[in-house]
Length: 58
Image 1 (spheres, rainbow, N blue to C red):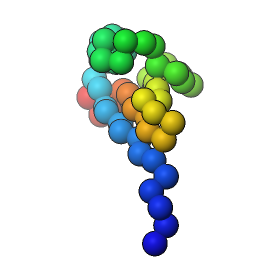
Image 2 (cartoon, helix red, strand yellow):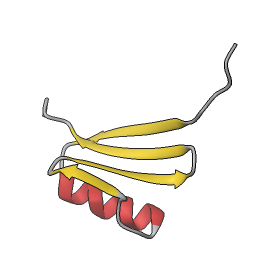
Image 3 (cartoon, one colour):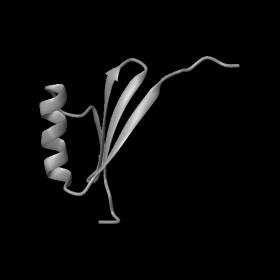
Image 4 (cartoon, rainbow, N blue to C red):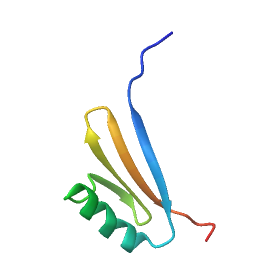
């Protein structure tokens, strides 16, 4: 069996702007990667990440 290489947690949010504010408060910094207007990701450790994505179903 292979070793675990890391994990990324994804949280779907209805209000992207409020989600970014929450992220910045939680991690005391802005996300590391924002490829488009409804998706942001940051690395909390070399092998761990945290992702916010707007939930288009709402």
